[in-house]
Length: 152
Image (cartoon, rainbow, N blue to C red):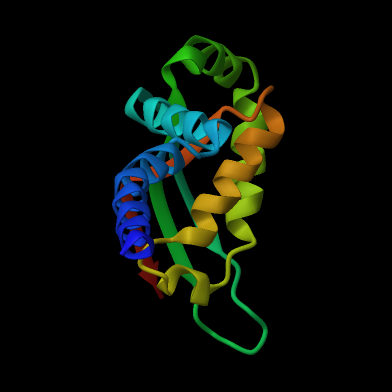
């Protein structure tokens, strides 16, 4: 009888400690990862749009294809609010160089690249050109106010 009472007693103690054990485990987390995730959310909430300009260009026709294409777009970039003044000043300073580099990057596109509805390759090329030219890689993302594509 004593042995049975001890088992029951042990079992009741164990049931009391499980909630405490789980509460202690709930405190186990990667603080740096949580801070970084919260920082990314906060930065995204404070993004500002910066006008990157209007562009119009004709893509070269490939040798095996008679099709040509003209694209027109008005691009913007999103930068953190804290970088807005620096980016605006840098865009004025590096304006002609950036425009030239953006046109050269866009001319590297193939007609198939324009079939992607999200225009991911063009967005990536624009972001790379801007972030390679401006100090601190401030551009978070690229979008388009307007985009048109004409095949002829």
